[in-house]
Amino acid sequence: MWPICSALLMVAVSCSGPVVSDDPTPRLRQGGHQSEADGRKQLAGYAATFDNADEWKQRAANIRKQILRGAGLDPLPARPVIEPIIHDRRLYDGYSVESIAIETVPGFFLTGSIYRPTEGDGPFPGILSPHGHSRGVDGGRKRNQNQIRSAVLARMGAVVIGYDMVGFGDSLLAGWKHEHPKLMPLQTFNSIRMLDYLVSRADVDADQIAITGSSGGGTQSFLLTAIDQRVKVSVPVVMVSAHFFGGCDCESGHPIHVSDHHDTNNAEIAALAAPRPMMLISCGDDWTKNTDKVEFPYAQRIYRLLGVEENVENLHLAAEKHDYGASKRQGAYGFIAKHLGIDTEGHKNSDGSFDESFVTLESWQRMRVFDEKRPWPAQAMTPNSDFTFPGAKSGSN
Image 1 (tube, helix red, strand yellow):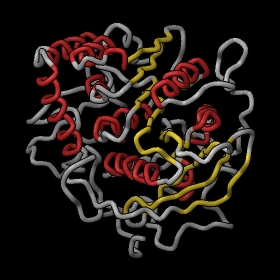
Image 2 (tube, rainbow, N blue to C red; image 1 turned 180 degrees about the vertical axis):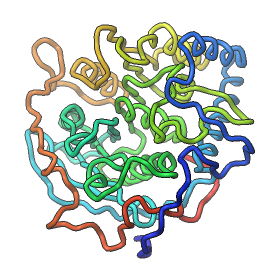
Image 3 (cartoon, one colour; image 1 turned 90 degrees about the horizontal axis):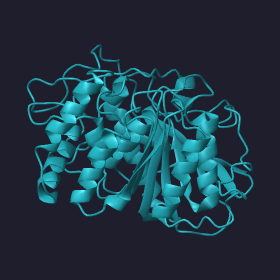
């Protein structure tokens, strides 16, 4: 475990302030930074910089490096062996749920839920399930749509971990706010560390890892996939856009999109998944309304250059809204099962859809990791304190 650390005073600087980088003029692109037309032009300009697989790989390698640098994660912080806190196993129809917390940086405990099949010993595929910005004590990973997809994928034969953003779930109840000068680095590093834990499990096949989330969880999905090759399948939902850069500092509050060394947008960052399988799920009522005509064709070209165009798909639901609703989940289930080698026999209804009827929705109180009976560890930092990333090392996975 980490040594016990005392609370630190929060540093009064902005999330958009300077970060550790050799770029003397860090710049931000946030929210609806540009028009839809400008987003199309931007992708056309990017496309003109590469005509073959090698040129794309060179561009992709630089973007990965600059994402880590802009996020303040180059070099990566130290990552000692994780000693998880796991308790409160609940048994349901074909799957179980356990509460988990891991210490990602000294004093910060990342909380979540582990969904596991009750049949078989594994090793099973592993899936990370980040959430978006649904507020309140029953939002985040505790939201029904997040519980449902985690339970269904677990019953189908995967170990699934839903985990909290900073200032959501247990950290919200503890007093953390979704605002911090190091919000983006911390949240991105949290994803890396939860992946570290997932692949360390004896019941998980470390070569069969997927990630899927919607909205802000979609951002976490494509960012982790971009910087960590251990993710083998990516399904970002209602988030990938050439003109929208994420409206929260946890998505765009650090200069990951543009610097003196690179220029990119979220559509291209998502495409860094190539040649690994990726499904973009989009809808007609948000910034992904053009995905089938703009962002997806850009990704298709990259996959085509790499000779694996069959590995990228788009489920575009023009009549739907911004969520991870039932029809979006149905598309994700099939894509993830196909590319992780999950047997879907016995998991479908008579009409061919995946069965969700068996899922037990838990109350937000039931999903708490820490409470009066199970208090936060003694070394937990004071909410909203500043912190120092542990001794860094060069390179990424």
